[in-house]
Image 1 (tube, one colour):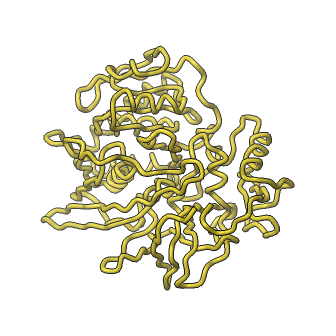
Image 2 (tube, rainbow, N blue to C red; image 1 turned 60 degrees about the horizontal axis):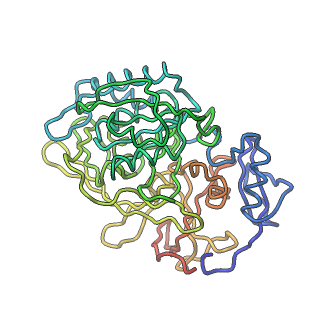
Image 3 (cartoon, rainbow, N blue to C red; image 1 turned 90 degrees about the vertical axis):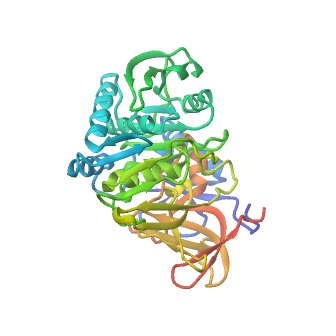
Length: 430
């Protein structure tokens, strides 16, 4: 698979919370994991886990609480807004929206959704193009505690069809685009977006997927890649709350302005938007789509996810400018390391651990090449409706700070450098 001899069969391991993963046969699992009396290929292990779960929900998206942050994502967002209600929250051209107005709109829409039956364990699709409207809709879904499946950019019928493919119970979209739904929409609510566009909440007539999107779980966000056949990655609220503190990005606050480096549908833009709103900064969105292809390549079958290198720019009062270049995967909230200026080396961000391992999951010596694994605060929960793919990419973390924690197998080769630094070598040789 990666140009090195690897085991074909694995033993199944589990935590007390019934999270499942695979681990090399004959090796003692990390702290918090116990061996389950079953071994086989990853596909066989996945089928066995599906049998153990009556609803077929494997570890990818079950109700596992995140250990990353004691405060909820929505609580932190509300706190930042309450500290400066009159400050600008977002701007697009001549449009300015204060934190107070933003949250009045969000709370109003969240109330409508709650009246329609949306709550924890539900899956809600959000599709559109206007970034301010998308932001309000996505935040409203998170406020209800549901999972927000977000699709933006591309053709209007394409983004609506993308979220419909995730089988949500409800789809929020501009009124003119709901005709692209594969089922006859039943309109439950109508409202006017920030930009003046008419929006609708349309219910699915067929039952939505149950369990795998996070039944009984905390609020979650899934930013769907624009390319078909690429798995969406589930970002938990507790995981995203990490963006409120020391995550290696420029320190912000009132008066700072964050400029997303990508179109509204890109995962990087979602990360930048949350970073701005969690820290009281102003989110400055472009009037027109920059035109770059949006979205990071998440797992597709057994192909290696592609790392994304991007820049975050923060303007401050007085003309000061902060800029940092980072590298990440969709599976790590688009963040795992900062580019060291002048060298190109990569330094893990705070609360992120990097491992460069051999085929037996042992560390390679400094200077040698191995496969890159990432663990820590920004780790995603798994792939949407892809339990076997989740099991193959998210393995028990041997050095996890919390018992039962996981690490992400990137499938990319890296060279281990001194200290905690590393350098990406390139995609693995098949």
